[in-house]
Amino acid sequence: MTSEAPPFWWEKPDWRARALSPLSKIYGMVAGRRIRRAKPPTISLPVLCIGNFTVGGAGKTPTSIAFAQAVAALGLKPGIVSRGYGGAFSGLHRVDPDLDSARHVGDEPMLLARHAVVVVSADRFAGAKALQAEGCDFIIMDDGFQSARLYFDYALMVVDAGRGIGNGHVIPGGPLRAPLTDQLVRTDALLKIGSASGADQVVRNAARAAKPVYEALLIPTSVKDIEGKSLLAFAGIGDPSKFFKTLQESGGIIGHTRSFPDHHPYTDDEIADLVRSADAEGLTLTTTAKDHVRLLDGSEAARALAARTLVLDVELVFPHPQTAARIISETRERARSRLIRQS
Image 1 (cartoon, rainbow, N blue to C red):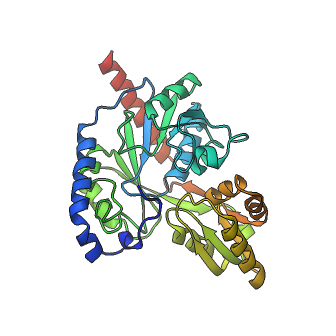
Image 2 (tube, helix red, strand yellow):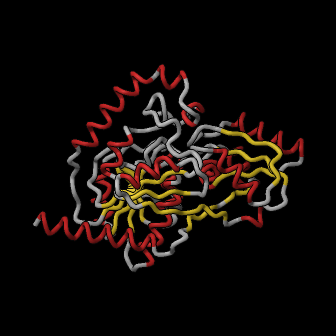
Image 3 (cartoon, rainbow, N blue to C red):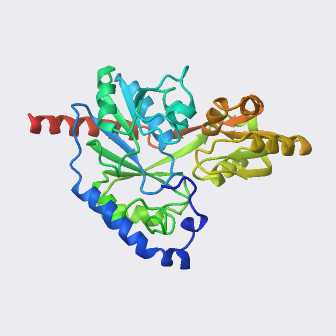
């Protein structure tokens, strides 16, 4: 799966999507069959899957963090199982935010580990069992909806309000990981992040399938650091343009922007170019929390860049404060019913 989605994926379907449609059809048939026939192993804990229909950039990480905080607020111990995309670790590992690095376990697990116990594993069932052994009593599966390697009691699918599902085509002609109809069958609810209209079609599809639709916003929490400053903004995330827009809405003055692929490991040449450009025009360097955690794990030049770069932190906020508690409660109730049936 590519980490840098082609721009045409997020535009109206054109000749490129049509030319790739035979391959998309084959990919979709395989992915859809895997979803329909999945019989993943179960664990004796509630499992909430935070997924998305498309490749990257929907907001899963802040959503997982918000739910970890909500689980903890209910007096439970949350545990997060992650694939650790972007990291080099290939086994099973409990993330230590003080000792581990993004290069080792991935940038997202490093951020998640600030809020809950995190285990990185390609085998999500083994990861969940390890979290259970750690004393966790509620599992959040960060991504993994399509892989079917761990049974989940509730699937909350995150969609960005601006980009939605792009051109609606399946990989490689578009960003969908599997046909939308196959994914909606296993979806329990949709979470639309933002207030734009790009996700209206998928929201209508979810509503027609009788799936609840919830809303949330990503709110900047470090606006005072950004406001009024002339910025050179750079980001290697799923949708850098969303980050740049948030900076402007937070009062930042965008001088230049630089976009990189998702989970991008910055080279010393790229770092030197960023520093030269910022110094030449008197701009303040700024980036995302995900990019910053990767820089901290990089070369001496990367760490120096991290030290002088402002970070725009964001927090997921639900307009209806009981949204997270409601979903957590339903997940726990479904798990209880499942265990009774299995006994």
